[in-house]
Length: 294
Image (cartoon, rainbow, N blue to C red; front, side, top):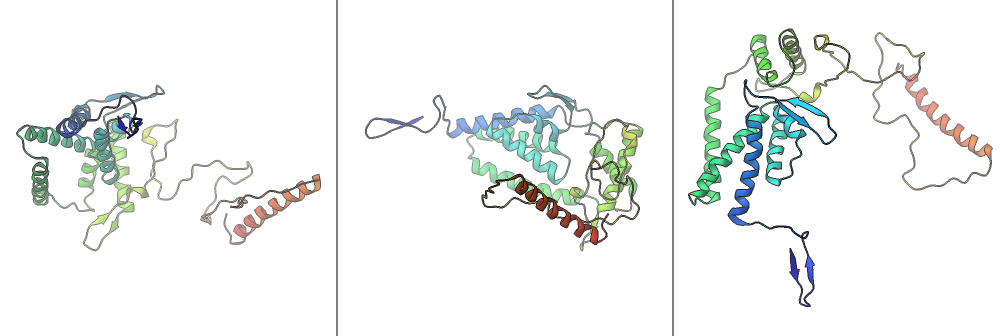
C-alpha cells in the first residue's frame, strides 16, 4: 500500500503485496480464524477428548489434551486467533483449568454472532445481547453453585480428580497419589478471608521435576526447595535446624554504573586489584557468618 505525494513519488506505508481488508470482510475473516482455532481444540474437550501430537520447529514432540499446553505450543499468526490464545492463557493463569472450554465457547459465540451478522444485525447490538446473556448466566451460576467445606476432603479430592482428568498424569495409584498431594498442598497454603472463604495463591506452590524416579515417588515438601549443587565437596550435605539468611543482593562485586577504566602498568597492580576484590567478597561472607547463618 502506498500514498501518492504531490510530486508523484509514492511513499510505502505497508509492505509490498500487503492486502488491506475492511468492513464486514475483515470481520468475517477474524471470526473464521478464531473458529478454526476453537475447532482445533474442540476434539480434545471432555472425558472422551482426544490427545494432540504437537511437533515444534526443533522436532520436539508433545502429546497432550490440555488446552493451555496446546495453545502455548501452537505458533498462531492471525491476530484474531491470538486473542483466543490470550483468553486461554488468562484462564489458565487465573483458574488453572478450563482453557479448552473457554476457547471452544468463544468459538461457538463467534459462530452464532456470524449468523446474526448474516441477518443484518449490527455488531453493537450483538455485543449488547451477549453482555445481557453474560449477566443472566452469572445469576444462574450463583443459584446452582454449592459451597465447599475445606474440611470435606472427599469433595476436595473429587474436585482435584476432575481437574487432573484433563492432564496427562496417568491413572490408578499414580492418580490417587497426585490427588492427595494436590489437596494437601492446597490446604497448606489456603488463607482464610473475612467473608469466610479461602484464598489459594498457586504461586506459593512450585513443582520441581527430576528424572529417574516414578511418579509414585512424588513428595510434598512444606518448605523451600533450591535445586542447586554444593559449590565445594567438603560442604555438609545435611544440616539440622539450619539458620538461613535471605539476601536480595548477589554475593559479588558489582560493576560501577558509569563506564570506568583502570590503567595498570605492572603485575603488582594486577595483584593488588584482585586482592581488593577478594577482600570485598570476604567482608560480605564474614558479615553473613557473623549473624550465625549456615
